[in-house]
Each structure stands twice: as C-alpha cells, then as structure tokens.
Length: 432
Ligand code: 4AD
Ligand code: MG
Image 1 (cartoon, rainbow, N blue to C red):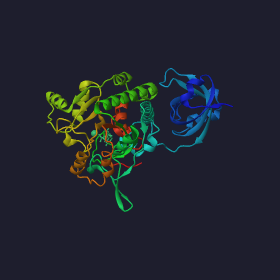
Image 2: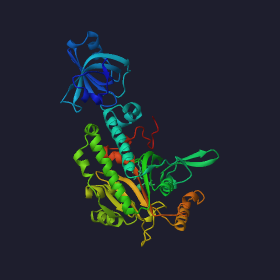
Image 3: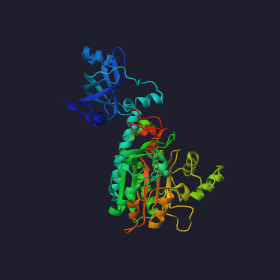
Image 4: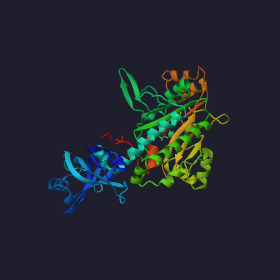
C-alpha cells in the first residue's frame, strides 16, 4: 500500500513512493515531459511527468488536464533546490477525481474587483493561501499567549443593546419586538468578565457601519479584547507590547514559507520583537507633527498621514498616550490632574499601517460614568448592568482591542485590509 501524505509532509518522504490528493494550478509541457503545478491546501509544489516513464494514457492525461481539476497522484518525492518549497514529485500515476470547467482565475493578472467577485475561488491562489495561513498562526498564538499569561477566554454576545464605540456606526436589527444592534466591541462585557475572573479576553466578529472606503476599514472585522482587573494603563501597555512581540515572533518561527510567498522581509519583522516600544503623549505627538510641517491643532484625531509619520519616525510600533477626551469614548478613565485628556493609548504600526490597537484604563467612579453615559446621549437604563460594575467592588482596570485584520495587513505587508479576511464585508460588497 502506498502511503497517502500531504504536500507539506514531503520533506519526510524523500525517495519514497506516496499518494497525494491535489488540484492542478498551472502546467506546461513539451513532447517528452509535463510540469504540473499542484496544490493540496497544505502547500504548492511541482509534479514532473516524464513520457518515457509512464503509460501513454497517463502522459496524455497530464498534457490535457485542465486547471483546478482534482486528482490523485502517485509518485516518488525528490528534493528540488530550485523551488521555494524545496521538493517535487515524479509522477507515476494520475487519476482524475473531479473535472474542472474553464477556470475563471487564469494564471494571468486579474483586476481586484474581478478577484473579489470570485473570492470563493481566489482563496485557492497562493497569496490568499499564505495570508490565511498567517491569520491562522496569529489566532493560534493569541490563545497561546493569553493562556500563558493566565487569562481566560470569555465570549461576548453579538446581539447587544449597547453602543460602546458611538451610536453613529451601529448595525440595527430587530430583536422580536425590540431593537438590537450587532456588537461593535465586546469590551463592556469583557469588563464584567474581568471583575468576575481577573484577566479575560474576548475574540469575535465586530461590526461597524462606517461609511469609510479606506484600505484600513472593514464593515465586519475580528477583534481580540483583553480586559484586566487591578491593572493600570502602564501595566496594560506592557501586556500589549509583549502580546504583539509574541505574535510577530510566532509568525517568524512558524510561517516562513508563507512569508516567503508574500515576499515579506523577515529582518524587518524581527525589529518589531524588540521591546519596549516607544511611548509618546498626544501632546508630544502634536508638537512633533507641527515641527514636521503638519497642519494639526490640539484636539484633532489623527488621520492616516499623521499616524504613518509618527510610527515611521520611530521605525517601531509607537504608543500614543492620553488623547483629548472629546474624541474618545465615554468609558475611559479621566486624567487625575487634567480634564481635557483621558488615560488611553493607541498603538500605531510603522510602514503606513496605522492604528492596530486602541485601549484605555476604564472609568471606575459610578457618578462620573453615569454622567458620561448621559453626555454620550445613551440611555442609562440600557447601561444599568455596566454601571453596576462600579457599585460592587470597583477596581482599577484596563483593556485594549487588537483588530486582527489591521494587524495582519501590517505583518503581511498587504495593500488593503480586505486581503486578510476570507470573505471581506466592505462598503459596497457583501458577495460572496
Ligand atoms: O479603537 P477601537 O474602536 O476600540 C475599541 O473597540 C475598544 N472597545 C477596544 C478595547 O479597549 N477593548 O477598535 C480597536 C481596534 C482598532 O485599533 C483597529 O485595529 C480595529 O479595532 N478596528 C478596525 N479594523 C478593521 N476595520 C475597522 N472598521 C476597524 N475599526 C477598528
Ligand atoms: Mg481606535
């Protein structure tokens, strides 16, 4: 019996005869030899079919088989130093499993709208394959990191009656005879979790009806939101930078092949494992921007050019601390000596990728928070449970949210955040 393996396992089967279930991605052939580009979901490699070594039927099949036909191949694994993958298979037998019609995504270049319309098929191509593998590694390393640090994973609801990040970007839905919204953030629930279990993190889809059509915005994105009791902002920043460094190191260690496919330079990534990351205040950021000819006044939120400048200035991810209260959500802790800023931080990624984390210390005083809820135009009845957390043993607590796709866009150096999620939801796209 010939052993069935995956392409990824080829390295442990050199000179052995194996059987692999594959799809054809491309091919070229001459009268005597056919080169089949193959994939099986675990990796991509080449199958070589030599006319003199196989039956006429097998050689004929190898020459005629169409792109994306699925097949069983049997053959011997060889090292192949010319390919990125390092191994190839010398095919002895080939059996078609499922024929393919004319495949729309041919090996030539295609426009991005065409590719997005065919995302269900585009996912099979090399670049999305590599990106989704890195996404998987980042999710794995997230669970690993928070487990090591003593957090528990706590799921927050998707259907909610609250609007932590502002009421303008809510997706409304009916909840029987009441109103409900799709979650913008699991944070408020994570706060209840932190006061119950100490250190928790949520990880789930979040929804923002943002009319933004930028390369950083998704309508549906996945967010990791840790929340920690008995913790001030400075300790939270240390957790944040250790977490980012752990993710980057895990991708370097476990995704070499995928990084290679994407052409992402590993030396650049290594820089981001060096801690600590620089910290500057919002005030200092404004001064730095002004000194470099940016037209910014104290009080504005930063746009993409400002964020790009700040992180590139340090050539590292940089924490910008204590933004103006007026541009941040209601739940952030007020500054002890200034009433115009709150205790918060955004982490800005270099190379033009902007904000990847938003976080803060949370307001702990019941009366202050009640006032903030009202000022934000929210109904205190909907937030009674959240306010309760300040009534029964309120403690200093802090948390943050990492946008998974924003982080991935930076790590993979993709042009657009839509590349990093299997089926992107964009302003004008909900298909496929
Ligand atoms: O800064 P944001 O809005 O913060 C929160 O939601 C807090 N409740 C987090 C917390 O403290 N628990 O969002 C956090 C992160 C951003 O830094 C960004 O990485 C990502 O979520 N993000 C988006 N990613 C893709 N598309 C969008 N439209 C995003 N909006 C935010
Ligand atoms: Mg933010």
